[in-house]
Image (cartoon, rainbow, N blue to C red):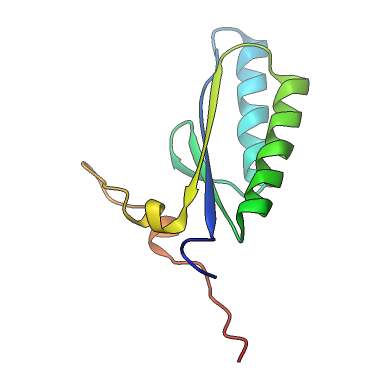
Length: 110
């Protein structure tokens, strides 16, 4: 996989948690992201790596569909960028998580 073709999809969200129903929806969204293979980078920030821009676009479409059906309040943002750009992300305070440190497994076909 080329670092320029491998894409990251990052989801950042701020959902209301004042009522029991809001907290239930927040937890549902968190669980759905994990089921879809997203890893938590920070609270309310999740990322997933895709093998191509097309795969990332499909992943974005899928996330949009289940958000549109189930979440009506709050703020959710998505950002897509290359693996090379992700690797250049600067951590100001703290450290990269173990998942972030592990590079994707690259297959050598010949």
